[in-house]
Image (spheres, rainbow, N blue to C red):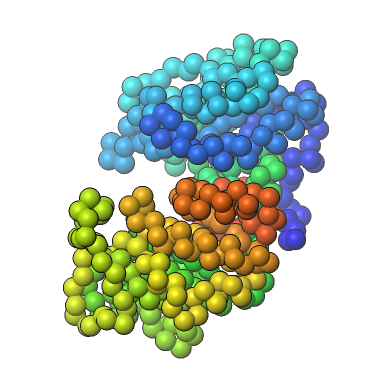
Length: 429
């Protein structure tokens, strides 16, 4: 197994006895006030128990959703992006329970500052073990969290005023905000256990054992072009899905596909040209065409085979890879013969078009010896929903690993693991 950079301070390097430990976690799992998937919360139990068992006092924080209006800069607070659902879930699982402090909220600007004095009573209770921990409000409710000015540093100094040690255990929260970046520079800091685990497994993607097969999908080609270019250099075989695959097909075969932007097709031409000589991209040979984004009209969808493409032809939405598409020469064989498989892909527009993803996950599961590394978010959710048997078996199978942040993995593929700014902020000089 890969090793961590020796410059990375680890939680075990610090004495926690009597110390307040501020841990940035990634519990961004709330949608409309309800938990959509508790995997990321469950992944941090070890950290919480470890802090308490070594005499420390845990204070947790996470972001939830998007709260800032991009045009006005106003911050919207309310039940939909509150940490309430997360804390309720934790309090059913962990003895002692977490308490959320009530802080003054401006209706347009969010929480303007974090006054350590407002937490004095809760911190006193925490140190008397009258509470299991403190859980701060959604970090994106704080005016300084996503700001790029002195307010971010001011918020980080406030974090430092309430805690003795900062721990980053939020690999999936890769953007350099006050709670992920500035806080690490404002006080003694360390990588949590989940962060360490993610970095170790990330190295298996960045330095894979060959043959290496990657499967990548997405709704916009331009957001994936950087990591996709880097990934192409590493893979032996690459399988595409979603709009990314549609853009590739449009560029390669000269067809028009509804819903695929012209700029995405232009970007995909570079990959088409590159693959003419390298031949790394495997093409599932059939896709599902639909005039609408759902299956509300029976009989309206049809299977289109790549062999029937004619230059200039126009098609409706391609919303999935057909099950039979995986029977194309080389596709199943590549997945079966791989030593490393990285999957950051939902092949179709779920829930109405699940066939491609279901077949993909089932094919990968047939390979019992390869390292199977799954990106987080939608990929993991659909793996659970579409192939629950595969998922349950994978939980006890050491050849599988589920990242908590698929976007973080893709960003790290482009920048390097320690090029992620929140990780770099932890490193000792």
